Length: 341
Image (cartoon, helix red, strand yellow):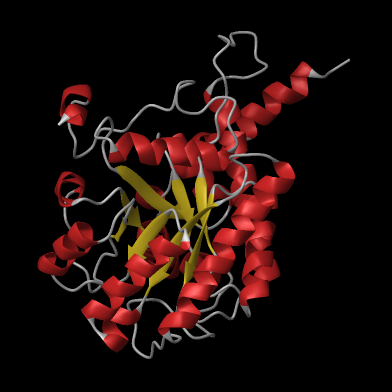
């Protein structure tokens, strides 16, 4: 395939975002171009670590990834709640604003925009797909959710077919809405995208990622048929949540058209596969929904235990200078000097 000639390793290499893919385009168009590059075989699968606030968004961007996803599980967890839709629409939109600001600030720092050694390279914020859960109500609420995320600068929005209040796709107790209602929910999101573009221009409406959780509740064939129907309703990407075998993953990729997301949740229900293998199957995106949240929880727990035992924590933390740089102090100081009288 073409992408094997363009990268050193299909497993770990990332497509560099340059002006040919991103500059001068709104976030949804940037995401669309990334998807097309992967679908055509010109680029490797899109590796998508999931963020949930400004600092995690900055870390993903600073690490050189091409895209990210704002996870509802992460936003809920960061607010001290389980992912059971206890976090409201307004709280999610606020979180998206913080994520967008983190991505923008990282992009400006990466190219030294406004600094004496600025080379003229264009700053590009990586695109982010936001978790729209069930849309926070009926079809009209779904449309408002799309508009809300669009105004924050999100490149895409995921909408799913669970009954509200929804929950993490890898826990017990899930239920889904009827087939036809699920399709209408997705259609409302797609219509909202088109309406937003009618108001603000082509390429401004968030791409729609349609997710089904019906595999566990109604069986694999029902989940496939829902994904097919979601595509017919106009969604840009599909996400069949929690396939339990490699065979199910392969069949999904063979039977459903368009870009597809693989959810690589460590210790979840889906087999964890290398990115290159996922792309060979037909996946376009490999999302890592809880890696950052889980890693931070583990490190904080270990650090708290060391403090409790009166032991040093230096092996668990960054030097203070690095911490300051990651959160933006270095750039802030330069900006402050830039505008001194």
